[in-house]
Image (cartoon, rainbow, N blue to C red; front, side, top):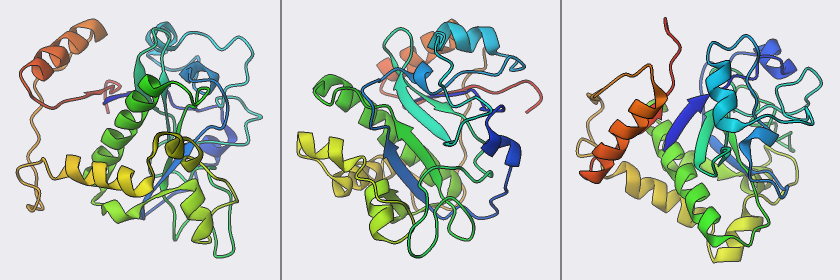
Length: 247
């Protein structure tokens, strides 16, 4: 997993900053549009300290229809898709303790807001005919969910699709990402099982306190990526997290 940040500070949802005290789960979405490029949805604010680096990674949205705009009506905690080089990455766009505008509401309420608020992210769809991209995008999503489950002590059973969230009464009527999963003989049970397998690879899975090791911190992104590549070549697990100085 490659986890980066480009907070949507111009989005009205970000500005609303409605707090979440307890995260109850995760909702997995897919965008429903034939555009796998992250820049369609994610763009940095001009005030972002890493603006130039992020723009170099994502490329510019020439149409200004991304979700870091004051007229946006949707705001997710994260997006998964391709950067300007065609590499699959995850970009966090909203703090996890902020309510998102993701799934709408159903007969029982909404996973957007307390007391049932969940972390929600989108996987950028393509034409739904590229198996290679499907594999990479959903592997990234599985790793991201494993990371979130461990970070927030969430059970795998608390992961739902938008479609499942609707059926449970906490989201609007959508069919994602099952519309994509079923094309390759997969479903959300498969997705949750893959997340569970990844979590159970942790040797201290049953221990409440985990001691994570940081093996490097770099000002140069290329050096960080090179170090991660060397770790993976040795069979180690790892990912990149972008952190602003002072955080």
